[in-house]
Amino acid sequence: QKEVEQDPGPLSVPEGAIVSLNCTYSNSAFQYFMWYRQYSRKGPELLMYTYSSGNKEDGRFTAQVDKSSKYISLFIRDSQPSDSATYLCAMSYQGGSEKLVFGKGMKLTVNP
Amino acid sequence: KAGVTQTPRYLIKTRGQQVTLSCSPISGHRSVSWYQQTPGQGLQFLFEYFSETQRNKGNFPGRFSGRQFSNSRSEMNVSTLELGDSALYLCASSSSITSRETQYFGPGTRLLVL
Image (cartoon, rainbow over all chains, first blue to last red; front, side, top):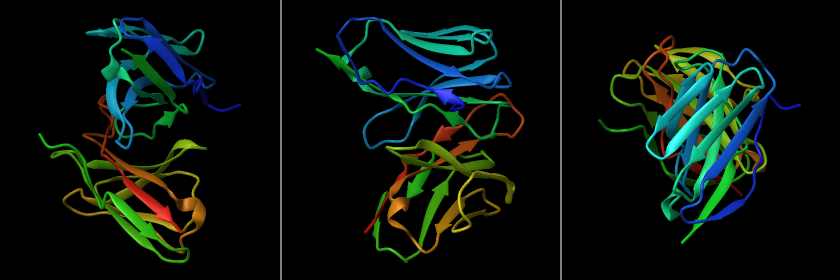
């Protein structure tokens, strides 16, 4: 079993839809949870960063962490064509520069 | 503040050659990590440097090596290139090894081995 599992999709939604992206993980020692967005031929861009359990909201984006279920989610409200990208979940045991363990990434397309 | 920069952006090499990739972290960041991204394996951790010392290493063969300079800039080297080394190599920087701050990625160097 991989440490971090993420459905690779692809996922295609109409503009304005609510998008739900998810990852599961096996190691309960993970404490820091990140979502990165990667456009084609670019490096990953940090979207959301959460420590431990709970919710975090930033504009149209909401990140949720459920440590009891070992499950994290990213919700995108009012999705836009510019949200079309690959979304990667990542996690680490400690913060800072400790190595990140990534999911495979989910390719999202938002159709106008 | 300028982001993480990586050079070169694209590289084509042949099997058996070696390659050196460069990374300049965000100003003030002292930690640099390297990752390999391929369609099949996704993003995998290579190694991490802090204050010129390698602190952590992933499961890659010894052909993959790196170093960090006193100004926090980092280089990674791959010797005796194999076809399977074709990938996007990403550098990420972080301000601290202990803070809750996370890592910020550069645009990557796309390496093609023929």
